[in-house]
Image 1: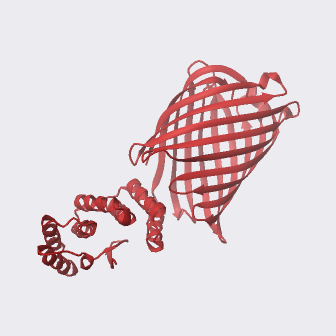
Image 2: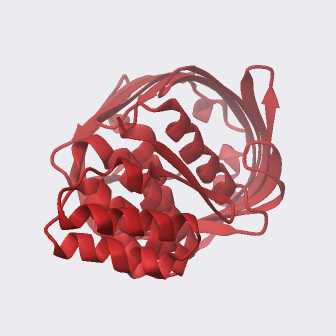
Length: 410
């Protein structure tokens, strides 16, 4: 059996195999013993010399690479530490341990995204509760660092066979489009689980052959807090948008939600949103008023697949009652891995809208594929089909949309 050795490295902790657990023969035995003694005395340079000597003598056991990784780490040689821990991570029995140590190396190199990726892999594949707890602890320290900005930007190019107008939802015709988005947040105080942070996002839509261009900027504050065995958050946002080249709407939003973890990777969530909508253009004053939405959602994520199912109820009060629907939405999202690098996601959405003068039923289905190019860059592509049936023929339409784009995370 493997013996555990704890080696403290700043706020990080290595859990690994001591040199005494390595079985060797002949010339290897003295090299291992000498490496172990040097390591215990804190002479990591000599430990590396002896372990490398054992490797040159023919020893290729995965535990040798672990011991070399620890020794190189203590010497500050992150390149060699990483190289050896990558070998450990490819061994089925020690993969979780290898990924954990790669996460520690990434933290030492201030590579935040790589560290997050490695610790998440530990949680996904490990059956060792202590190792999972340590990986989760490291993730919490990364996420909870006050003053850290995080976010991402995205760009997409696509085509829609029947663009719908933002103002009233009627079909406008086909068009190619480009969209650019960005989001960021900044932890002001506390932790991600119990703290206050600033958030902001931007979206820009540009249509080549339809006058439906729209851009929106939003800023807000979000407070997270434990709530018994659950977690909760409260948030306030303010957004402003332009539509068809002129001012369109300001929206003040209040939002609150709770989350209860059911089992590993499973959770139930509840969310409430209130939007106060103020028109910035007399042409669209009929949309002024408020909107409220209630959502109940179930999620389950694991290393091979993810699923989300929710029901949402929406009710409105607008200046023109004919644009103030009550809505019911059912949505299911399910996805998983296609290969080591590619993922897929299917999305089915059914929405019923009850207006004073008409009833609409919208069915939408989409398929998305994605590939992580590296720790910071991700490619995504989507095809989507929409059918909207209405008792008013002006609102009955079908459309197909396709787009591809990249996202960069920081």
